[in-house]
Image (tube, rainbow, N blue to C red):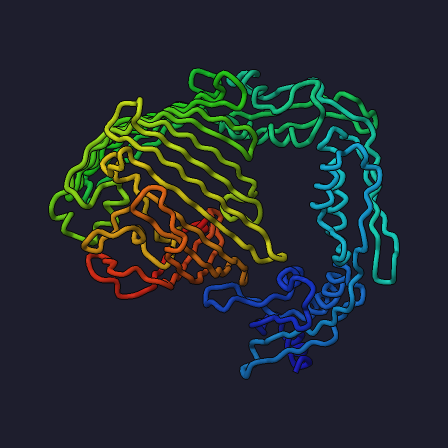
Length: 612
């Protein structure tokens, strides 16, 4: 059969489409990586997708690439034992199967670090744990190179820019090798003179205060990377580069640094004018100044007018407030929404002091003063399909009118060690929030609340990711009076990013009629397995749990709602597009959905971005 394919391929190149390419015997390497290394690839099954055609010469070269691929990953005895190709009846499509005998790999017996005495015991332990190659793994040549680079960067990040690291292999047994990383740290260096170039209206002082080092500090490449990141964070520059100017052959103890920037536009104005059957005429304008009054201060103004909503929003940021790593932010608004079924007026704002200790750690203190008044007409109160929309807007669907002023002090703290905010594969996130309203402050409401959240991600092998989340919180109104807490502060669970067996705002204490009305204590958690399928598609399986209770500080772990489910993911530049199906393991008795008793114990969710 294969001979017929080869003859046909020789007869007229490009006639035979590759409908599938499969490998048998692949157990110890990533089959997806192997497939990506080959020229021979299967075509898309979609009518509009790209078609792939069998090329005899490319296929013969791929058979050699397969063996080279295995050798690079520590399998010197790997061979293509045979291959099959099956033509369809029309002889215009072929299924290709490659049979591979992997053999036994050469494994890493141990990794010796020699000459690294300049590192502390803790730094040395961290280096051992983070080396791409580890004992008992196959001797992958790419990981071998990455291991040497990781050891070299460990020295460069601790003040040794001229360090050298060599890597040698010692045979322990026929299929076992010891890796020896031999370091020569050379001179301990410090930062020298800082040369800044390319700035026009931005002062040297603004640039220097973004640098995480100063002349005389111990040289580290980490400081160079962090400084470059902070310069881009100002949003003032289209280009920013922080580069050492050391001469490796001279091994100077002082390393001069050059900072090169290219400024972008500091003032931006965006406008929009349109017409809609509901809003009728509408207009919007947004103005931003990224270097307002100098010093990288950011001022912004937004105004909008339409028949449905109108108002103005102001924001201001002082990026360097009194000391490094401190910033001060102000935000305020006067906004009115005048829908047919409800109206809402908001006035006020908040001031926030932020301390960014490192790229991973921060804390903030905020002073909040917000006035809100809303009116819901009777038709909206009686239309139970609108309850979710009203709750999402912070309006109380139990009553036609609410009014009050929230004056509060809030404290937030967080740490994030993940490397990809859109789709984390490793690391963890910790957040805490404490808020006090009333007491010595003016305002209608009087309560204090606290919430905490933890997320953890770790890779299982080279493909799967295990993600876990736990969040708890409670609100304590003074004198146990619910009126001391604004409705929009109540807890609700359920939805695309919560307990996915239920819809949005469906998990909470119920009114006497069966409607979710929110509560003052909450616990929710999730565990999820994420695996790639093919191309940009992936799949998940999850378990969600949690509940909301009516009283403050009443967390009953014996009274939780559980949901299980699965979903699909499609990777995009802005995060994965996801489709999830969640199934309730213990439905909520007497729950009304859109005013009717719940009829199905499952929910379908479509969204963008991971659930957590």
